[in-house]
Image (cartoon, rainbow, N blue to C red; front, side, top):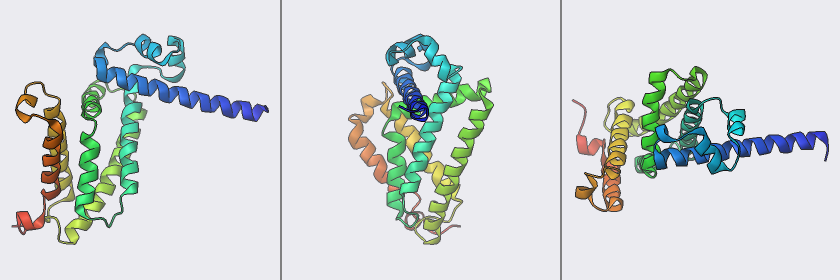
Length: 212
């Protein structure tokens, strides 16, 4: 094996190990709560030494932010797969499903957001997260604006439609993970199907009527 091949293999193994650390950390944060998870627990789950974790990440805050960045990049990939000319139902269905399909993960990142803002942690990664998120918002606004111009959605700022969909998805995630409210909601699957149908119709111009 040449020096270049060895270096390439080493870099590939480093990236794979980094992803394994992030995957295991995310699972542990969801299972036990992020505050209870230690670096030692993450290392044990991955099957590596504690010191190896620090070769990849300096702090837990860095792990938090990289997980959140990965989540926003997954959303960006979703938008790249959606045709800008697709109907509103396809857009809402994909966006809503992305947010609620793994409520534990979504709620984890919602909690982490508050912690990281309060701690003013890793500014460079926060800036990267916000840049990806701003790009996602710009793409989503463009998609929504096309539906407004086509007369399918109420003529209000695109961000209103996005915020309404986010609020519905956020509430759905919280409800399905609430020990109290699940007693009233029952089986989450038909409930989420119902909410998805609500989301698809939400903001329709023919439902709300013309802007006043």
